[in-house]
Image (tube, rainbow, N blue to C red; front, side):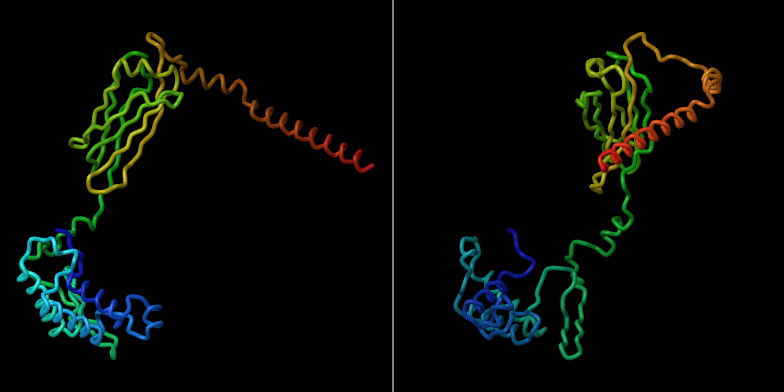
Length: 284
């Protein structure tokens, strides 16, 4: 049975007090009706609530929303007695279900005393939530994927993670179409993705994309990794150019960049000159 953090008998008493015009739930209502803006911490308002609780107990009142419950009046009688005793003992009507309670309030000195509710039946021990002080975000630490994948040939991708529960992967072709996707468990920080022959046959020759998300059961923020890989037709290999040969070719044209820069500057100068001539003609 769902309950609010405030006892239902207090809510019923407050509602009846507002209906009777003794207090108001809002500041504007309190000003217009010249009554108190209800505050359970104020002794006078708490006394009003207590009187309604006594009336409910004596008249056997059960709120309409609770009349269908399978409880005899003893249950309601005990609830009224508990709230009445609390107000008489503490001088206020602030009652909740949390681990702390309002022990004392002094408006003259502007002080509030709050004590812990040390009940042996309270379900959470001290330090229960300490593990959440050090947040461990999921992290992708390594991805092993072939630089070149053959069309219509299966390929395997190995994912290394930390503090992750599972990984979500998406393989897309150059058109942006998702060819393969799924979820794999991160067992001991390792996950294996197998792209089948049928799936690689739908990839495009050239650059394709892999995106991976590592998620955790403990936190909603995932880690993301993205990379591209090449797909070639069967039997096709990338041209193998030796490093020395590539270096020699680049040395043959040491001034290529300078020449291009000069040509660009000349073109810009010509354009500026033409525009100036046009402006002179228009002004004349």
